[in-house]
Image 1 (spheres, one colour):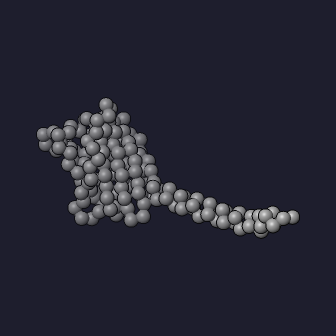
Image 2: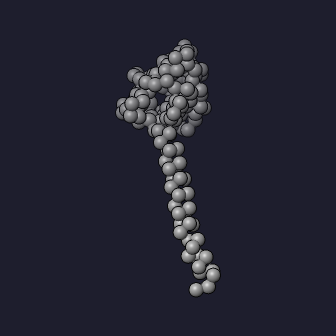
Image 3: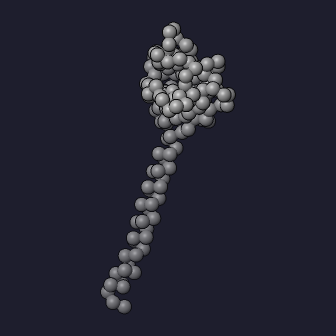
Length: 147
């Protein structure tokens, strides 16, 4: 056996162990990132014009309701079961037109959020998308707003 074969036999176990540990580290890190992003499931029958929409993931829940506010304009309210840091909402029509992503404002309790969408009729949107951030997780979801 020459010195190259001896070196290879000596180094191979260390390379195997290093590769195994590095793979384990990066796979666990990727799983942790996936655990932080959670998809909210919408309850069937959401009809934004007539009744609140309900979305949930495990113990976290969101209730969204809309009202026609004066000449064309919508006011959307969102209530959460936990304290939320940021809320972004978007309404889409069937033709793909969008209101654009809008940040919602809170009166201070971080469980109730509001946004005004001037120039929009409550019967226009077909799809509602929402993204929320808490201290430990990010939640996102989409639901049709008419059955």
